[in-house]
Every structure is written in structure tokens, then in C-alpha cells.
Length: 282
Image 1 (cartoon, rainbow, N blue to C red):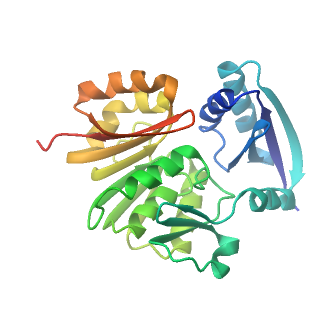
Image 2: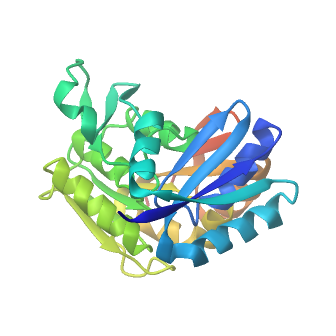
């Protein structure tokens, strides 16, 4: 039986937990679980990803020196049970996010069902940033439109927009683990004809433009990609930008507004902010 590395990060407040989440998001690609009382983040890595453990731990210490980080080796069964303990079917507006092990018994009447195996990459709907984008998408008219999902993780947003009526969805990520996970979830949902998943470069070169662009990133990554993201949004289109800690919202807006973006909507949950940014028709 294979073994995994479980990293647990303890903090004192919800604000500190948000800082840890932001620092961990670029490294914890196989999944995280958030505990509120006491505040704690857990992330999992395979045994051959020790470099990722060290990189994430260093990023967390740099962002929040007082965070308490421990790493423990667990068996594969422990990894699976950890996800089953933390992740169950959930309603986000009219969308149901259903883990693969509960799909056969799920019978609720909803607008759309997205089946996810979360034990592979970031994106289960549990995180406030993912929930915020899923709610924002349900406020848009997606029938027949094109969508590009940057930093797709598990593919949850790409799958949701396809279920909500998008004609073509391009999902991309720089991490091969996320690409494999997203492709498997596309297959699991039977959406291969409408959702294309590809690995992309860090500067997003070659990524197709679309009327709707989703980017659930971090403030730092969003700032670095501001011009590249602007190039992806077609005239009169919308960028749904999430993963922003509230303390950095003004900094993000100061970078995006000069590029022609205007705020169409804002959504906040706890320490996290999501923005719907529009561009002019011409």
C-alpha cells in the first residue's frame, strides 16, 4: 500500500487561517481540508513530492512565522478516509457538488450536478473562493457562450459552467497533477465533447480567449498575470477573479482597473473576496 504525507498547519484565528490558505494554494494541489475550531489546514502530498512539502512549508512560514506546521506519513487508506470524512454532497445555489462515492445515492432536485473525485487536486467547492465563483456563475447567462478557466485544479468550475449551458470550455493549469485530475473528472461527468483540459505555461501564452474567464488564483498570481488575463477576456466579456484575501483587494483593483476592467459585482465570505470584472464592448 502506498503512503502519503499529511501536512497539518495550526493557527490561532480565522484571519491567520486565510493567510495560510493563500500561501498553501500554489502547492497543495492534491487537496486541502479546512478546520475552523481550532483553526487548521491539512494538505496531502505523495511520498515523491517532498519538495512540495518543503516549498509549501517555507511559503507558510514566510507569510505567517507563528504558524505551527507538522508533517506525518500516512497510508493510502488514511488519505482516502480523510477525504470521505471532510467532503460530502453540498448545494451551492442551484448546483450540487457530489463526491464520486455518493453519486449513486444522490437524488436531490437541482439545476446541475457536478461529480468530483477531490482526492487529486484543489477544488471541491468547500473553499469560500470556489463557492463564490460557483454562485457568481449562476448569475450569468452562460447559454452557448465560451469560457476559459485558468488554474482549473480539479476542473470543478469548468464542469459547472458546462452544466450551466456553456458551449465550449477550455480549462488549463500549469500543474500536470491538476490536468490529470481535471481530465478524469471531465470523463466522469461525460463532458469530453465540451470541456477541453490542457497544461498551460505560466504566462498563459496560447490559452484561448473567451467571453467568460474564471481565475480562482491568489492575489499574488493574479497581479503577475493581470495583462495576460486581460488578453483572454473578449470584448464585453467578464473576468471572475477569486482567491483574493480582503487585505489585498485594493492592490488588485489598482492593477486591473487601468487595464480597462470595471467592477460589475463583488462577493465576500470571511477573509476572501471575489470580483466580477467587466471589459468594454470595443
